[in-house]
Amino acid sequence: MSETAKVVARTLTAVTREMEERQDVLDRLDAVAADGDHGATMVLGWRAVAAEVAEPGDRTAAQLLRDAGAAFADVGGSIGPLWGTALLRAGRALDDLGGDALRDPRGLARVVSAGVDGMAQRGGAREGDKTLMDVMLPAARALDQAAAAGATVEDALGAALAAAAAGLEHTAQLSARRGRARRLADRTLGHQDAGAASAFLIWRRAVVVVFPHVEVADVVAG
Image (cartoon, rainbow, N blue to C red):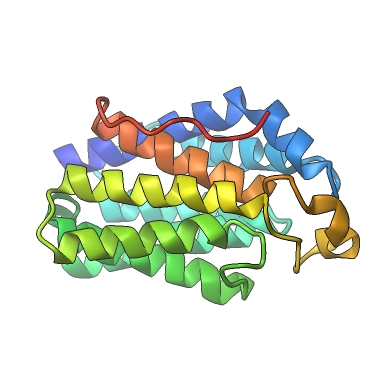
């Protein structure tokens, strides 16, 4: 197994632990105007991912991402297809570019953008709708811009993480426009979106696994 595949497996497993540790916070955010089970659903999805990559064998990094996507998609609900699609599309992009693409800022940006674009197409949400896309789209855009400007992988990921944090904080100023929460849109004002919060936590843990000294504050409320 390549070093890149090992990093991917380790990162996916670390994200699972993050979801387990923050399940209660995510459920509380979701309970503002929905069923209060977002954290529980994310834990189910990421545990399925962790189980899938627990014995990676000789699979490539791209194969691990694709298999992780299939595992997450099987969880169902509204979030399963979104993260499932993101991981699957990222894996396909990495297949096209080659495993070493994750070591190159521009290659990494293309892989991430493929996943985020797939997520956006699958869910149909846009920035300003108070969803996880208020984190995912700005983060992917910041990563791409930093890579194009010649940043290192570490600095590009730092820029993406800062954009993810800003995007999450901004969701507290928005009213929900999609999903069940839109029926209680006024109630959501002043509260962060649960999906955006979990997306930020995923970005944060994934970056810190690879670059432990990258510092971005945990801005999840509660």
